[in-house]
Length: 234
Image 1 (cartoon, one colour):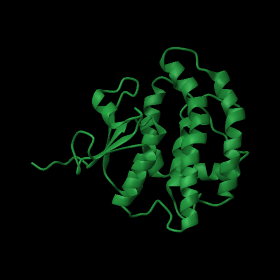
Image 2 (tube, helix red, strand yellow):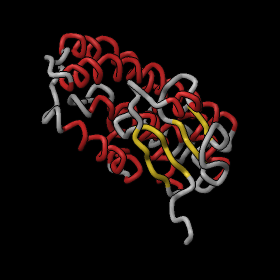
Image 3 (spheres, one colour):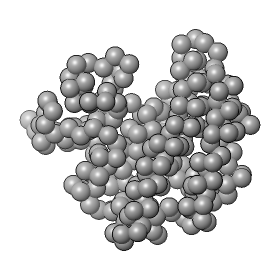
């Protein structure tokens, strides 16, 4: 009997924006994948062996190896670059040198500055507390929304400059990353972007894309079990 499983396995959870980022790249390219859940708070030893920083996601390519370190890649940016190389069409990394540089910068900026302010500043204080039966950390979340995120949004608004995409004239890894990371806030709080019209229009358009909406729906289903509604942080 032939093995019908997809070659690519994403170890992690759709609650992670970085898992959704990798899933979105796969969907954009029509590449089959599956997600295998990992408890990041107490991961098994085999996962620790393939994830030196003990973070998700880690990708396994079963066509290379079914187990062990071989065939695995840690870090979402490294994973997405691998998928682009193995499945080059449609391209998600611009060909023009400056556009490529811009895409890689925006990807890194979203993975760091946006993720720190939105994920650590808003998602964790709210959802981690609620999931433990505690009161949500709304004071910290409101401080992040009103003080930490606006400068990050200012940068993204200026870089987007009214265009449809962040880098070049087509969808790229930059657009996928910004949407996935910003939607981490949307899991627990309202995300009004009226002060940043270009970013708001971009975010609305990205949310409608199946490559973003599908993985997000899986995450939202999990979040709503503990948190039925979103908070207003304004």
